Structures are given as structure tokens and as C-alpha cells.
Length: 412
Image (cartoon, rainbow, N blue to C red; front, side):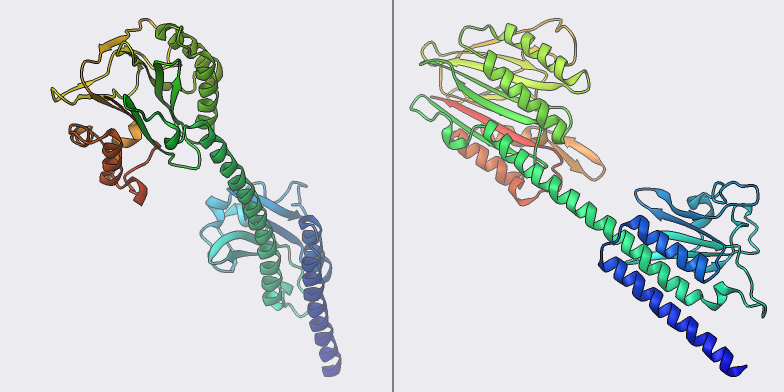
């Protein structure tokens, strides 16, 4: 009897070693997850005589990964089990044969599975056939079942993480390409006008890889220049795509001859068509004639640019305009601003990411530091550099939560 028992025990040990070897070889051979689960199920059901297996795994929410055998009424035994309600209380292997939770009565043991100390799955085993000596197979082979289960679930989790990493790498590559393409639409600072009569300087920094801010400077003829700044509501890819389309439309429409009010109406139509009412654009556009020294502008719901007169030390805000683009089907009124430039001036246009900063759980809004930075005899380029330093924009200021764009003009 002793020799027979020893042979039986040796046979079980050999089986377990072979099973682990088979599972390991299957994993190394990159066996599909479905086939791997079938192999796992056969080992437990056919060889260890386990009656029921149910596995839930977490994949952005709890989902059933494997279910074997049904209840006496022919319905799956997992239909009434809710992981968050019924299983999250179990953090260790637990026998549930006497559980008062009716949803678990079809099973005898629950095995939580952790990967890097993170709960990733629950395995339930039930309907265990007892041997003649009354020892349950699950008790007899519990360590082996736990080891085998951990190997399978960890492998599946690692496959998921690997696929996620591939997706993230591909997305990062696409975002990097989008960032480079968007940068091509934004004028580089060294390409902006810098003459004895006019100097233009700018700064652009998206909060993420791509952003919804935009500025442009367009030479309309020998004496006239157009300039603008814009901000799409929201952030990310959708805002960047809308802005890219907006840039193309603006460049196609903005000419010396087109009245600014008519340009605003056409741009509003295009934004409505593309955004379907889900987004809007705040927009400031100006046109300056160096010969007549006339400045005209329209502010479509944007942060009012600051205009500083260097001789008279007067500061004004360029507010005249209308509502933002894409807010209404028809803009009810458009007020165009007109200025005769009679002395050297500086104009600072900016987006709201520059003046809306996090302070704890609140957002502070203010332009005082912009006014102080602009109201002096320094160049507009130096003013912008001072603002960048003051706000620690390039040093990762955690209070900043949006794209930041500045466009400055100095007319001599």
C-alpha cells in the first residue's frame, strides 16, 4: 500500500512538472491567449478533476476571461456575480463554501491574482469532486493551482501591457509627427518682420504635444501687414485639427482687399461647418498700413491685446469686435476698431493660458504683470522674454494648464 501510494504521489508530481513545462513552452512559443486558457482549463478539469472555473480580469473594467461548466439550470453560474460587489472584499485565497453571498454558492474557493502588487484578476473554482479518502482535490493541489493560475494570469497581463506599450509608442510617434506638422504652420520667430519701421516677435508653447493656439503674420503688400492670434476651446488633437483647418482658411481668404468684417463672417461659417457647434475659436485680427500708419482690428471674443504708447505712456486694451467664431450661426454685430498711429507703440497679443493660472483648487486671472512688463521703453522682444522668465514658462511652471502664445508688435 505504501509503495502504491508513493507511486501515485510520484505520478502526480511528474504530472505537475510536465504541466508547468508544457505551460512554459506554450508561453515561450507565444501561444495565443485563447489556446493558453484552453490548456489551463484542461489541466484543471481533465487532470485535477476540478468541476467549475470562472476567471474575471481587470482591463479598464472587470470582464469575464474564462468560464467553464454551467449550473444545474443550464445557465452560466457567473451571471449573478458582480466583481466590485461580491469579490473585491477578498484579498487572499478564501474558501467560500459557507458564504452567505448567494451569488458565490456555486463555487468553493476564490483566488485573487496580483501582478506587481496590483489586483488584476479573480479565479473562482467550484463543484470539486472529493476522492474516497474525503480529501478535496483543491486542498490537495491548492499550491499548484495557485502557481499555475498566477503564471497564466501574469502572462495574459504582460501581453496586455506589451500591446498597450506598442499602442502608446505608436500614438507618441503620431503625436510627435503632428507636433512637427503643426510647428510648420506656426511662423518661426526668425522669419517675422524686423525692419526700421516694424518689429514683430512671438512665443508659442503648447501644453501637450499639439495645441489649439495659433498666431500668424502675413505680408499683404509692400506697405500692409496682417496679423492674428487665435485659441480653440479645449485642448489636444481635436483642437489642433480644427486650428490647422482654420489656418488654411485664413491664409486663403486674408487679402489686402477683403474687409475685416467680411473675413470674420466667412471664418465664422467655416468654423461652424467644421466644429458642428462642439468647439469655438476666440480670434483677434489686425491689419496695419505702414504708409498711412492706420491700424484696424476686430476682436472676436479674444483676450484684449494691450497697446502701449511709448511717448504719452498711455495703455489701452483692443476690445472692439464681436463674439467668438463658431458660437452663433450669424454674428449679430461686428464693431471694427480703427487707430491712427501717431507715435511709437507696442502691441501685445496673448492667449488665456498666459493669464489663467492654478492656485490650489482655484484659477487666478489677471493681466497686471503683463501691463508692468509692457509699459516701459524696452523692446517688445525684451518684454516677451521678461514675461517668459516671470512666469517660469520654460521651467515647467505647474500653475500653467493651457497652451501659451504671445504675439508682439512694435511700430516705430
